[in-house]
Structure formats: C-alpha cells, structure tokens
Length: 197
Image (cartoon, rainbow, N blue to C red):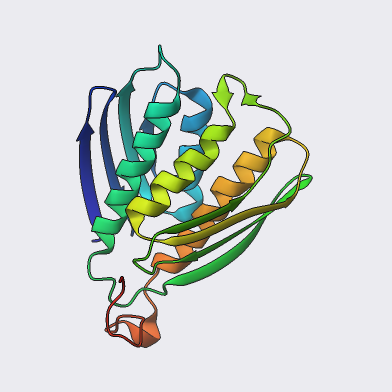
C-alpha cells in the first residue's frame, strides 16, 4: 500500500494529514473552513485517494495559513506515498466541466515543482472563503508534492463552479498519473532512470 502520514505544527496551524494512493476515495476532513472541506472531499472522491485532514488553524486571523499549510502537508504526504515512483503512469491531462465552466488540468509527477495557474474568479469570495486562496493551495500542493502542474479555466462565470472544476480536474489527473502502468510496472518513467532534478 502506498500510504503516508504527515504532521505539521507551527505557531499558526496544527495539521495532521494521511493519504492512501490505492484507496477508494474515502475522506475525513475537518479544517474549520466549510468550502475548503468541500473541495478536499471532492479531491478524495474523484482521485480515489483516501484522504484524512485534521487542521486547527488561526481562523480568527483569516483562512490563509490553514489553507496553505494543508496544501503543504498534503503535497508532502503524496510525495512520500509515491516513494521511488517506480511504475507510475506519471502524466495525465483532464478537461473538467462544471455546468457552464470548463477547466483543464495537466500534471507531470516529475520531481520538478512548477505551478502554472491561469484561473480568474468573478468574485472575491465564495461564502467566507477568499478565492485567491485557491491558487495558494494549488501552489503549496504542487511545490511540496514535487509535481509540474498546469491549471487553466478556459471559461466560466460562477466562482464556486470554477474552483470546483479545478479541484475535480486535479483529482482526476492525480488518479491517472499515480496509477501503476501495467506495461512498465517495474520501471521509473524517465529516460534518466530517475525523477527529479
């Protein structure tokens, strides 16, 4: 089983994360931020990665530290669970519709962290959640998971739908990219013989 657990404690947040890349999409998420919990539940369900997140953050300040630090911890957990990355499919691309919105998410589990994020939101908030934090989360996740990640919303009008299409797109891309390729199950998917660097 490809699993990992991460604990991260700072003066701003206290976070525990666990993942099972070969799970069934079960989620147990409690960050204290309703909309963010919803996005993480979607991530688990559609990636088929079991995800547990428990976060206690300085929500009296704002949602920034909790959102970013969960991205850091979840990225670290995915990277740790991938281990040597032998046999993974590595690449995936997904077009994800959500009603009037269409987003594209492309991932390379390369060991070289890059985020290209071309997503605009018509509103500053979704409920109490600042829409600018969607990018903060994706950046924290990509950098700490060690993945190259391109996220672009091609069109959309509703901020909730835009965010949801991005998280669901990542979920389906992760699902495909972390899957073991039966034709190369004993190989690292790189001509260099290793990923990263």
